[in-house]
Length: 286
Ligand code: ATR
Image 1 (cartoon, rainbow, N blue to C red):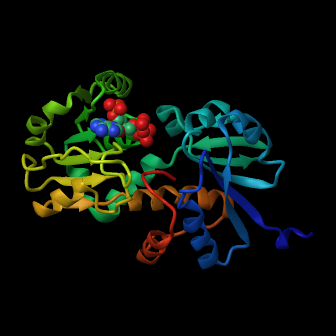
Image 2: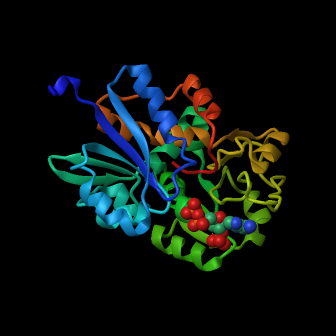
Image 3: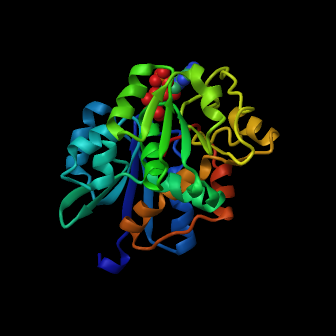
């Protein structure tokens, strides 16, 4: 087959992978841009992940996305990682460059681009609260530090995790207990939820009282199902500026698509509506 008729193949791998919205998202761009390519979900069990990394290039893939639970393993296994992947200790985007499997992490980029798109004033803030200290919080903390915030309060149920993250990210970050929230909020420009609280199917979420936040505070949630989480709903009821988490999912996909398929796709309202309509998904993940 001549080169011009060959199909460029990419994947998203996780375990399980049935909930992923990424195939719908990349499929939309492939259609829209008229690219002869494919993007398929591949369920790979943790015990088979190393073999998968070793073999995906031979199987004809240009690269792909990595989601739960493989992001940390991917970081360990790929031959070359860039600065942001090293900072986060996790990889969500893989590609083959001259026979070398490379990895980056586009979650911090996705978070920043979503806020820039929908609440550009977030860059002027100085003090942020990040709820949660799990894997997803790392990219968020890095993004907030990168735009220049001087204080990032990490609030988490399990104190040891909040302390570990504050140690990792340095002196602008401080760990706190959940009970400290009310007091911290009164002096905060920006509140981000990175916990699974409020996620569809996640059970009854503890109510987060947003009353102490200043009137100009911006509130965002990286959970996108439901699109309006209980936190965003209560912030909206108070008249605060809110940004939902779907845009982070859409924007984090842009750099990978460009690497594999050679065209930089756009995040548009049409894409958003299309992905919202795609069934079978939940949560915060690729
Ligand atoms: P991820 O890697 O996707 O962030 P995770 O590592 O399981 O997932 O982290 C989930 C986050 O949600 C954690 O901050 C977790 O708090 P703990 O570190 O104390 O477990 C938080 N979380 C989940 N359920 C919670 C609940 N009912 N109350 C408070 N925090 C909760």
